[in-house]
Amino acid sequence: MERLIAVVDLTSGEVIDRTSTTLTLDLPPDFERASAVVSLDQLSHGHYLATDGKQHEYSVFPRPLSWRARGEDCLIADRLGREPSSIAGTYRLTSVEWE
Image 1 (cartoon, rainbow, N blue to C red):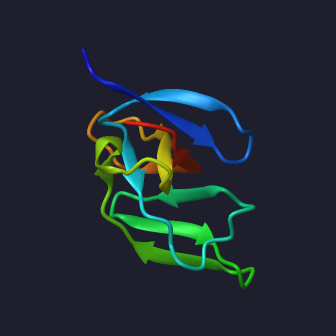
Image 2 (image 1 turned 60 degrees about the horizontal axis):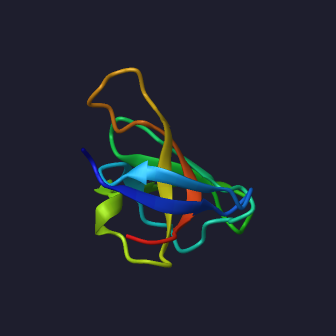
């Protein structure tokens, strides 16, 4: 049985239990938090709205939720691609509640 970790969706305030292996991304430094979403493609490029109001791209390395610290803000996999091994998909702004 996989360990569950609680995260807080920072747009809705909802607390959700996710498996410790759920993929996460680091926040880009100029991420517009109001947008709350990053789209990740198969080439590990995150696409997001920056604080300057423009779409930006950055290279990412997805890490499991278990690597995150309590209270850390990160982007967590919301919807992944159709392939089981796919990292591509939508990642939402969350905060790690506990480990």
